[in-house]
Image (cartoon, rainbow, N blue to C red):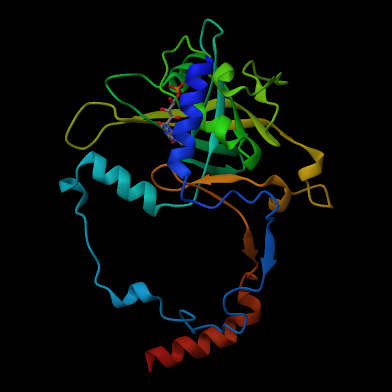
Length: 278
Ligand SMILES: Cc1cc2nc3c(=O)[nH]c(=O)nc-3n(C[C@H](O)[C@H](O)[C@H](O)COP(=O)(O)O)c2cc1C
Protein backbone atom coordinates (compact mmCIF):
# COMPACT_ATOMS: atom_id res chain seq x y z
CA UNK A 1 0.00 0.00 0.00
CA UNK A 2 1.48 3.41 -0.97
CA UNK A 3 1.69 6.09 1.74
CA UNK A 4 -1.00 8.18 0.02
CA UNK A 5 -3.38 5.20 -0.19
CA UNK A 6 -2.67 4.30 3.44
CA UNK A 7 -3.40 7.90 4.54
CA UNK A 8 -6.67 7.91 2.55
CA UNK A 9 -7.69 4.56 4.09
CA UNK A 10 -6.94 5.78 7.63
CA UNK A 11 -8.83 9.03 6.99
CA UNK A 12 -11.94 7.23 5.72
CA UNK A 13 -11.76 4.78 8.66
CA UNK A 14 -11.63 7.65 11.15
CA UNK A 15 -14.53 9.50 9.48
CA UNK A 16 -16.55 6.26 9.36
CA UNK A 17 -16.35 5.81 13.14
CA UNK A 18 -15.78 9.37 14.34
CA UNK A 19 -18.93 9.65 16.51
CA UNK A 20 -18.45 6.30 18.26
CA UNK A 21 -16.61 5.61 21.53
CA UNK A 22 -13.18 3.95 21.31
CA UNK A 23 -12.83 0.17 21.28
CA UNK A 24 -12.25 -1.13 24.81
CA UNK A 25 -9.50 -3.72 24.53
CA UNK A 26 -9.59 -4.44 28.28
CA UNK A 27 -13.28 -5.39 28.25
CA UNK A 28 -13.29 -9.15 28.72
CA UNK A 29 -15.87 -11.91 28.47
CA UNK A 30 -17.83 -12.43 31.70
CA UNK A 31 -20.38 -15.02 32.73
CA UNK A 32 -23.56 -13.92 34.55
CA UNK A 33 -26.75 -15.63 35.66
CA UNK A 34 -29.26 -16.34 32.85
CA UNK A 35 -32.08 -13.81 32.28
CA UNK A 36 -34.46 -15.70 34.62
CA UNK A 37 -32.72 -18.12 37.01
CA UNK A 38 -36.12 -19.11 38.53
CA UNK A 39 -37.66 -20.13 35.17
CA UNK A 40 -39.79 -23.31 35.37
CA UNK A 41 -41.16 -25.63 32.66
CA UNK A 42 -44.15 -24.02 30.95
CA UNK A 43 -43.25 -20.47 32.10
CA UNK A 44 -42.76 -19.08 28.56
CA UNK A 45 -40.99 -15.75 28.05
CA UNK A 46 -39.53 -14.22 31.21
CA UNK A 47 -40.90 -10.79 30.28
CA UNK A 48 -42.73 -9.23 27.35
CA UNK A 49 -40.31 -7.64 24.91
CA UNK A 50 -41.18 -4.14 23.63
CA UNK A 51 -41.18 -5.51 20.04
CA UNK A 52 -44.17 -7.75 20.82
CA UNK A 53 -46.31 -4.62 21.06
CA UNK A 54 -45.67 -3.76 17.40
CA UNK A 55 -47.19 -5.45 14.31
CA UNK A 56 -45.09 -7.71 12.05
CA UNK A 57 -43.92 -6.55 8.62
CA UNK A 58 -43.71 -9.38 6.11
CA UNK A 59 -41.55 -9.86 3.01
CA UNK A 60 -42.69 -12.47 0.49
CA UNK A 61 -39.30 -13.61 -0.69
CA UNK A 62 -40.25 -14.28 -4.30
CA UNK A 63 -41.31 -10.60 -4.60
CA UNK A 64 -38.29 -9.25 -2.72
CA UNK A 65 -35.30 -7.81 -4.57
CA UNK A 66 -31.89 -9.47 -4.14
CA UNK A 67 -30.49 -6.37 -2.43
CA UNK A 68 -33.37 -6.20 0.05
CA UNK A 69 -33.11 -9.94 0.77
CA UNK A 70 -29.37 -9.54 1.40
CA UNK A 71 -29.84 -6.59 3.76
CA UNK A 72 -32.69 -8.23 5.63
CA UNK A 73 -31.24 -11.72 6.02
CA UNK A 74 -27.69 -10.66 6.89
CA UNK A 75 -29.01 -8.31 9.58
CA UNK A 76 -31.55 -10.81 10.97
CA UNK A 77 -29.45 -13.98 11.03
CA UNK A 78 -26.86 -12.77 13.53
CA UNK A 79 -24.29 -13.03 14.93
CA UNK A 80 -22.57 -15.13 12.27
CA UNK A 81 -19.17 -16.73 12.84
CA UNK A 82 -16.59 -15.88 10.20
CA UNK A 83 -14.41 -18.37 8.32
CA UNK A 84 -11.13 -16.74 7.33
CA UNK A 85 -10.32 -19.03 4.42
CA UNK A 86 -6.83 -19.56 3.05
CA UNK A 87 -6.53 -21.30 -0.32
CA UNK A 88 -4.14 -21.64 -3.26
CA UNK A 89 -4.84 -21.15 -6.96
CA UNK A 90 -3.75 -23.98 -9.28
CA UNK A 91 -0.59 -21.96 -10.08
CA UNK A 92 0.16 -21.63 -6.35
CA UNK A 93 -1.02 -18.00 -5.91
CA UNK A 94 -2.10 -17.69 -2.28
CA UNK A 95 -5.47 -16.23 -1.31
CA UNK A 96 -7.12 -15.42 2.00
CA UNK A 97 -10.63 -13.95 2.48
CA UNK A 98 -13.42 -13.79 5.11
CA UNK A 99 -16.78 -15.60 4.71
CA UNK A 100 -19.64 -15.37 7.20
CA UNK A 101 -22.07 -17.72 5.47
CA UNK A 102 -20.21 -20.24 7.57
CA UNK A 103 -21.22 -22.90 10.05
CA UNK A 104 -20.28 -26.15 11.71
CA UNK A 105 -22.26 -28.95 10.04
CA UNK A 106 -21.26 -31.98 12.07
CA UNK A 107 -18.55 -33.25 14.42
CA UNK A 108 -18.90 -36.84 13.18
CA UNK A 109 -17.56 -36.54 10.54
CA UNK A 110 -15.99 -33.15 11.40
CA UNK A 111 -17.56 -30.91 8.74
CA UNK A 112 -17.91 -27.18 8.21
CA UNK A 113 -19.87 -25.32 5.52
CA UNK A 114 -19.05 -22.13 3.64
CA UNK A 115 -21.25 -20.49 0.98
CA UNK A 116 -19.99 -18.35 -1.84
CA UNK A 117 -22.23 -15.67 -3.35
CA UNK A 118 -21.50 -15.47 -7.05
CA UNK A 119 -21.81 -12.55 -9.40
CA UNK A 120 -21.61 -12.78 -13.19
CA UNK A 121 -19.10 -9.89 -13.00
CA UNK A 122 -16.38 -11.64 -11.02
CA UNK A 123 -15.70 -15.18 -9.76
CA UNK A 124 -14.96 -15.80 -6.08
CA UNK A 125 -11.28 -16.79 -6.15
CA UNK A 126 -11.62 -18.82 -2.94
CA UNK A 127 -14.40 -20.90 -4.53
CA UNK A 128 -12.37 -21.49 -7.70
CA UNK A 129 -9.31 -22.45 -5.65
CA UNK A 130 -11.20 -24.90 -3.43
CA UNK A 131 -12.94 -26.59 -6.37
CA UNK A 132 -9.65 -26.85 -8.28
CA UNK A 133 -7.26 -27.90 -5.51
CA UNK A 134 -9.75 -29.53 -3.05
CA UNK A 135 -7.89 -28.02 -0.09
CA UNK A 136 -8.20 -24.99 2.19
CA UNK A 137 -7.75 -23.83 5.77
CA UNK A 138 -10.36 -22.10 7.93
CA UNK A 139 -9.01 -19.72 10.54
CA UNK A 140 -10.97 -18.10 13.37
CA UNK A 141 -10.70 -14.31 13.58
CA UNK A 142 -9.90 -12.74 16.96
CA UNK A 143 -10.34 -9.07 17.87
CA UNK A 144 -6.64 -8.23 17.47
CA UNK A 145 -6.62 -8.78 13.68
CA UNK A 146 -10.17 -8.02 12.53
CA UNK A 147 -9.10 -4.96 10.50
CA UNK A 148 -6.49 -7.04 8.66
CA UNK A 149 -9.02 -9.82 8.00
CA UNK A 150 -11.64 -7.32 6.83
CA UNK A 151 -9.15 -5.83 4.36
CA UNK A 152 -8.91 -9.26 2.68
CA UNK A 153 -12.51 -8.90 1.48
CA UNK A 154 -11.24 -6.41 -1.12
CA UNK A 155 -12.58 -7.58 -4.48
CA UNK A 156 -9.16 -7.69 -6.11
CA UNK A 157 -8.23 -9.62 -9.29
CA UNK A 158 -7.03 -13.22 -8.78
CA UNK A 159 -3.32 -12.34 -9.11
CA UNK A 160 -3.45 -9.92 -6.13
CA UNK A 161 -2.13 -11.50 -2.93
CA UNK A 162 -4.44 -10.47 -0.08
CA UNK A 163 -1.86 -11.69 2.44
CA UNK A 164 0.27 -8.69 1.53
CA UNK A 165 -2.75 -6.34 1.69
CA UNK A 166 -3.53 -7.61 5.19
CA UNK A 167 0.01 -7.76 6.56
CA UNK A 168 -0.85 -11.13 8.14
CA UNK A 169 1.57 -14.06 8.30
CA UNK A 170 1.43 -17.49 6.65
CA UNK A 171 2.19 -20.53 8.78
CA UNK A 172 2.77 -23.84 6.94
CA UNK A 173 -0.01 -26.43 7.32
CA UNK A 174 0.68 -30.10 8.08
CA UNK A 175 -1.65 -32.00 5.70
CA UNK A 176 -2.79 -29.46 3.11
CA UNK A 177 -0.86 -27.04 0.92
CA UNK A 178 -2.70 -23.76 1.76
CA UNK A 179 -1.09 -22.15 4.81
CA UNK A 180 -2.80 -21.34 8.10
CA UNK A 181 -2.96 -17.79 9.47
CA UNK A 182 -0.26 -17.47 12.16
CA UNK A 183 -2.17 -14.73 14.01
CA UNK A 184 -5.23 -17.01 14.33
CA UNK A 185 -5.60 -18.97 17.60
CA UNK A 186 -7.71 -21.68 15.91
CA UNK A 187 -6.96 -23.04 12.43
CA UNK A 188 -8.51 -26.00 10.64
CA UNK A 189 -6.95 -27.85 7.72
CA UNK A 190 -9.75 -29.00 5.41
CA UNK A 191 -10.31 -31.14 2.34
CA UNK A 192 -13.22 -30.46 0.00
CA UNK A 193 -15.86 -33.03 0.99
CA UNK A 194 -18.78 -31.92 -1.18
CA UNK A 195 -19.95 -28.93 -3.17
CA UNK A 196 -23.28 -27.94 -4.64
CA UNK A 197 -24.06 -25.11 -7.06
CA UNK A 198 -27.40 -23.48 -6.24
CA UNK A 199 -29.71 -21.84 -8.80
CA UNK A 200 -32.79 -19.76 -7.93
CA UNK A 201 -36.13 -21.45 -8.81
CA UNK A 202 -36.75 -19.14 -11.79
CA UNK A 203 -33.33 -19.27 -13.47
CA UNK A 204 -30.41 -21.48 -14.51
CA UNK A 205 -27.78 -19.02 -13.31
CA UNK A 206 -25.69 -20.38 -10.45
CA UNK A 207 -25.86 -17.73 -7.72
CA UNK A 208 -24.39 -19.59 -4.77
CA UNK A 209 -22.01 -22.48 -4.17
CA UNK A 210 -22.12 -24.41 -0.92
CA UNK A 211 -18.91 -26.11 0.08
CA UNK A 212 -18.55 -28.69 2.83
CA UNK A 213 -15.05 -29.03 4.23
CA UNK A 214 -13.83 -32.11 6.06
CA UNK A 215 -11.57 -31.02 8.91
CA UNK A 216 -8.37 -33.10 8.79
CA UNK A 217 -6.52 -31.31 11.62
CA UNK A 218 -7.40 -28.48 13.99
CA UNK A 219 -4.66 -26.42 15.61
CA UNK A 220 -5.42 -24.43 18.76
CA UNK A 221 -2.96 -22.19 20.61
CA UNK A 222 -2.52 -23.70 24.07
CA UNK A 223 -3.11 -20.35 25.77
CA UNK A 224 -6.75 -20.18 24.56
CA UNK A 225 -7.62 -23.64 25.90
CA UNK A 226 -9.66 -24.10 29.09
CA UNK A 227 -7.82 -25.68 32.06
CA UNK A 228 -8.84 -29.24 31.01
CA UNK A 229 -7.11 -28.60 27.66
CA UNK A 230 -10.10 -29.96 25.75
CA UNK A 231 -12.14 -26.87 24.96
CA UNK A 232 -11.55 -23.37 23.65
CA UNK A 233 -12.24 -20.65 26.22
CA UNK A 234 -14.25 -17.81 24.58
CA UNK A 235 -12.76 -15.26 27.02
CA UNK A 236 -9.30 -16.09 25.67
CA UNK A 237 -10.19 -16.63 22.01
CA UNK A 238 -12.01 -13.25 21.74
CA UNK A 239 -13.73 -14.23 18.47
CA UNK A 240 -15.33 -11.67 16.15
CA UNK A 241 -18.73 -12.29 14.52
CA UNK A 242 -20.47 -10.59 11.61
CA UNK A 243 -23.68 -8.58 11.90
CA UNK A 244 -25.57 -6.78 9.11
CA UNK A 245 -23.97 -4.09 6.92
CA UNK A 246 -20.39 -3.35 7.91
CA UNK A 247 -20.88 -4.18 11.60
CA UNK A 248 -19.07 -6.79 13.62
CA UNK A 249 -19.63 -7.98 17.17
CA UNK A 250 -17.56 -9.35 20.01
CA UNK A 251 -18.33 -11.61 22.95
CA UNK A 252 -18.39 -9.70 26.21
CA UNK A 253 -21.07 -11.59 28.03
CA UNK A 254 -22.33 -15.14 28.46
CA UNK A 255 -24.54 -17.25 30.71
CA UNK A 256 -25.29 -20.93 31.18
CA UNK A 257 -28.63 -22.75 31.12
CA UNK A 258 -28.60 -26.48 31.95
CA UNK A 259 -30.16 -28.94 29.48
CA UNK A 260 -33.54 -30.34 30.57
CA UNK A 261 -33.29 -34.00 31.54
CA UNK A 262 -36.32 -36.08 30.44
CA UNK A 263 -35.61 -38.53 33.26
CA UNK A 264 -35.83 -35.80 35.88
CA UNK A 265 -38.74 -33.83 34.40
CA UNK A 266 -41.04 -36.39 32.71
CA UNK A 267 -43.58 -36.34 35.61
CA UNK A 268 -43.75 -32.56 35.57
CA UNK A 269 -44.07 -32.51 31.74
CA UNK A 270 -46.89 -35.12 32.00
CA UNK A 271 -48.72 -32.87 34.49
CA UNK A 272 -48.27 -29.83 32.24
CA UNK A 273 -49.47 -31.58 29.08
CA UNK A 274 -52.45 -33.21 30.92
CA UNK A 275 -53.51 -29.74 32.11
CA UNK A 276 -53.34 -28.48 28.50
CA UNK A 277 -55.48 -31.42 27.22
CA UNK A 278 -58.16 -31.17 29.92
C1 LIG B 1 -16.87 -10.31 7.28
C2 LIG B 1 -17.15 -10.65 5.84
C3 LIG B 1 -17.88 -11.78 5.55
C4 LIG B 1 -18.12 -12.15 4.22
N1 LIG B 1 -18.84 -13.28 3.98
C5 LIG B 1 -18.99 -13.70 2.71
C6 LIG B 1 -19.66 -14.93 2.45
O1 LIG B 1 -20.09 -15.64 3.36
N2 LIG B 1 -19.77 -15.33 1.17
C7 LIG B 1 -19.26 -14.59 0.13
O2 LIG B 1 -19.39 -15.00 -1.02
N3 LIG B 1 -18.62 -13.43 0.36
C8 LIG B 1 -18.46 -12.97 1.61
N4 LIG B 1 -17.78 -11.81 1.86
C9 LIG B 1 -17.16 -11.09 0.74
C10 LIG B 1 -15.82 -11.73 0.35
O3 LIG B 1 -14.90 -11.73 1.43
C11 LIG B 1 -15.24 -10.94 -0.82
O4 LIG B 1 -16.09 -11.07 -1.93
C12 LIG B 1 -13.83 -11.35 -1.18
O5 LIG B 1 -13.34 -10.46 -2.15
C13 LIG B 1 -13.76 -12.76 -1.71
O6 LIG B 1 -12.42 -13.00 -1.99
P1 LIG B 1 -11.92 -13.98 -3.12
O7 LIG B 1 -12.55 -13.56 -4.43
O8 LIG B 1 -10.44 -13.77 -3.10
O9 LIG B 1 -12.33 -15.33 -2.73
C14 LIG B 1 -17.59 -11.38 3.17
C15 LIG B 1 -16.88 -10.20 3.46
C16 LIG B 1 -16.67 -9.84 4.79
C17 LIG B 1 -15.90 -8.58 5.10
